[in-house]
Image (tube, rainbow, N blue to C red; front, side, top):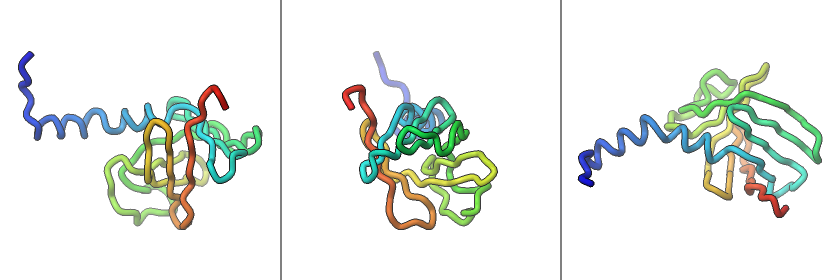
Length: 125
C-alpha cells in the first residue's frame, strides 16, 4: 500500500481530527489520586464525577478539552492546543493537562502549585 499523505499533511490531519479524540479516550475510566487514594475522578463520555471516600463531591459535571481556560475565572492562561480540561457548572473549573497516558494523569489546577497526580484504576485494585 502506497503512502500518499506527506508527513507535514499527516501532522496537520492528526492535530485537526484526532488530538482531542485521543485525549477524551485516554481520560475515560476511573482515576485514583496517588497522594490521597480516597480521592477519585471518573470520566464517562463528556462527564466527570469527583468522589472522596466513595461519596460524590461533584457529580456528572460536563467537561470539554480546550485550548485555554476561556469562560472560567482563569481567562489569561496561555493558548495550548487541547491542554485544558474545563468543567461546565455554576463555577467552571480549569485543569491543565501536565501528563496523560494509559496509566498516569497529572493535572495542574490554575493558581495551585501542587499538581494533582492520578493513576488509572484497574480491576485489581
